[in-house]
Image (cartoon, rainbow, N blue to C red):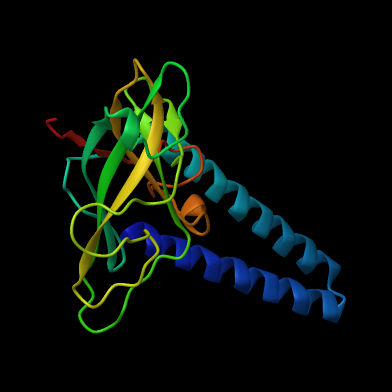
Length: 211
């Protein structure tokens, strides 16, 4: 848990305390105190929102090297590599004019010591060098030895597996990396978080496989 997480939890506690005090003041019919508490609550929420937006706009975007793990608590993900699918008979996605398929190799792992891990709400987009983003154009592929895996599959403590996700890009586009989406709340309202409101999401850079 980071300092930002602690600050967010402390802020939530403060808001709950103020709401409880407002409810007591309303029940007692103390209108002056009710107005003061409501004003304090409004100022606190507005101040938090301003800090959230300011930090999101000031902090630079975070980048992770190919193979570097990005962890959400004990659940981690890393972008390993990408390769273009050149063979017309091996296209994982529906063919489209002036486009080609790419397969991104992703490693999902757990740093938990004694509990199973699963990220049910995880999703990824492939970002090209121009900043355009693409969603997977098909289900994960079976590649190499072992079963087909989804990003949301369960992990044993300390375990890992690889996911092979296909994307369809234009002929001139090249992958730059992956953007990971791991739930919107509460990350989008935590100051300094990679997924906070208006902050550019972290990019997991990806290496190219030789053909």
